[in-house]
Length: 103
Image (cartoon, rainbow, N blue to C red; front, side, top):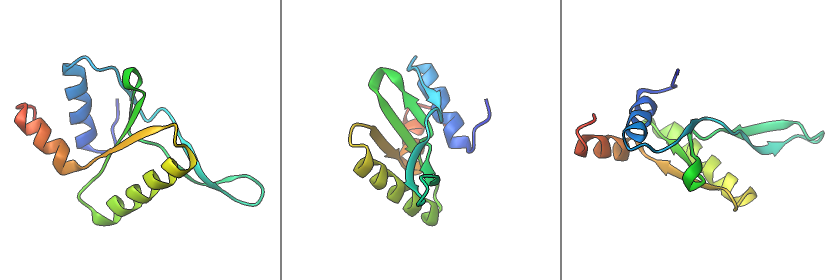
């Protein structure tokens, strides 16, 4: 499987190790549309954990991207309060992997 970032690959390995079922970028959520109803902005979280009905979005250390992802997650929560989504910051992911000896 091709991942956009190495931290995604590492998280996938961790989830596999603990036998947590996951899907990679399975759902795209439309966040805004134009006057004709065509999507103008969308958000596709990195992972979906079906057993937990939870989407996970990983971030990078690039503050510009972190800010953009935080805004998209807030918008998704406004539009779809039924969707559970969590942001996992790269430093948190690295710390978790390091504690488990997987980094």
